[in-house]
Amino acid sequence: MVIEIKNKINSVDKLKEKAHEVEENYKDCIEISLCSGTGCKAYLPQELYRLMLEELDKNKEKINKKIVVHKTGCLGYCEKGPIIIIYPKELCYLQVKSEDIPEIVEKTIKDEVVERLFYKDDNGALIPKVSDIPFYKYQNRIILINSRMDPRNIDDYIRLGGYQALVKALTAMTPDKVLDEVKKANLRGRGGGGFPAGDKWETTKNAAGEPKYVLVNASEGNPGAFPNRLTIEGNPHSVLEGLILAAYAIGSNQGYIYIKQEYSLAIENINIAIEQAREYGFLGKNILNSGFNFEVKVHKGAGAYVSGESSALNTAIEGKAGEPRLKYIHTAVSGLWGKPTNLNNVETYANVPQIINNGADWFMSIGTKGSAGTKIFSLVGKVKNTGLVEVPMGITLRDIIYKIGGGIKDDKKFKAVQTGGPSGGVIPEHLLDLPVDFDELTKAGSMMGSGGMVVMDEDDCMVNLAYYFIKFLSEESCGKCVPCREGLRQLIYVYERIMEGKGKIEDLKLLEDLALVLEGASLCALGSTAQNIVLTTLKYFRQEYEAHIYYHSCPALVCKPLINYEINKEKCTGCMLCVKSCPVNAISGEVKKPHIIDQNTCIKCDACVEACPEKFSAIEKKTGLLGVKL
Image 1: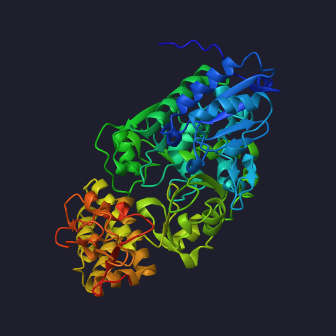
Image 2: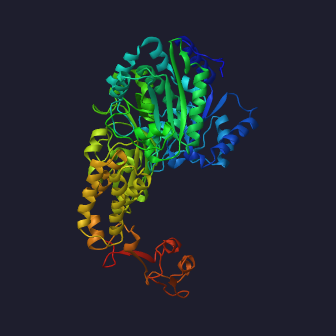
Image 3: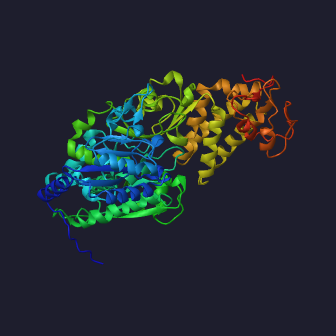
């Protein structure tokens, strides 16, 4: 089917005209940005959007200025969502509810504010402006620029400088020059390995064989990691533009975006972006009258975590089981259908337009010498301000967790932060001032990964944490190679022994040996990087392993076989709430008299702890041979 292109942009002047036209459309108007990312979808942003339009319509006679409502991608501050930002004053309203919409509209029309929805600092002072809120203040958002952009509106992207890099490249730069600029910028792959993107592009470009392919890896699936998913949801055109630029530099005419089937919003938004780019002439034949042809297809993955590995991703697109191949030939040389194939992740491609627009020297001025630019992280776990953050490389973990993240929830003690997903390791308190870049995280035994950052406090057990991630990797292993398939299973058996109080000190050496076998003999990175979580928890928290083994104690009170629930007779008032809450009738006692827990019947479900009034806190957890928390 031939698609008639009605809005084709085929020159620098036409793109500038379009950007000016869009800017004029927003001139002197009030812009209301409503977060509509996946996180806020749980809070019915569609309902908020509908109510906003209804209220604006009700009050249209009172409105003396144009008002535009943007349904944006994720605005980052997930802890305080849903979020509304009102421009040009940059007023930020947090945790907006349906009943707040009429007041927001009324006050906005009157040029007034809703103070109760502003951010409050620790001293209770109100901070109305979004850029002054600590969560945003210490970031450097060059990719997450979607706060004034509807991801389904290409004009909004063009207004913010979108597709200028593509026009610049196709009208004023040769493919080699584009490649050289990316190499000079030292853009390292944001998918985890940190391999220089320009070197990978050059390998594919120079490899024998046609056609050549360019692929986007959007198969993110790490527990606690969502930067790629939310980037492609909120700013899909930046990824698409980066992919087209890579194709031009390499000499490819066909691209694929591999994305998980369950990421429905990301799939919708990238498909809309592709159609809009095609309508404007940025995709298809003879793009910008340059003679360059390029098309993109979206491939929906079946959900396998291992399909995020480069060669497994290729086999999945080919219609086979997503299993890795031997690496004696790299994907860049022989990838999709045996042809030269370049693969980068979402964030890597999203950086490319910025580099072409602003130059390699600009990009190198951000971050560190070995790790230029910014990095997007999903900051989650036991931190006060969870969400999506973009920070310059080289920022310390302490600044991310305490300045942006606001510190540890409930003012508990920081214990560790895990970076890089299941393939990463844990970093303890004494390394909090470690600069966050590819090399420093690797030296500490962890890795950058795709951007997961899970913060843990004193109530987290490092033995149980390592077990959780090893179990995840075992379940997600394709099973093709013995070291990964069987090695991960054996690690699980050892961890289960230790958490049940049946471990021996020799098990710690066995864990180390198994981890090193996985590292050296696994077919792909799923198995070879599994050692990180094992070795870093053993290195930095060995005393917790020894407590489990020597004293049958879980210091964090997490491992259930090592915990007993007891009722403090002096605190118990006999209110019967714990008796009523117990699902197995393990608690007995009379009204107004201390109760007793039958240890043989108790399933340690925490129901009684939650039912006991906080002012009494009569139910206590105890661990270890002496029945005390060590």
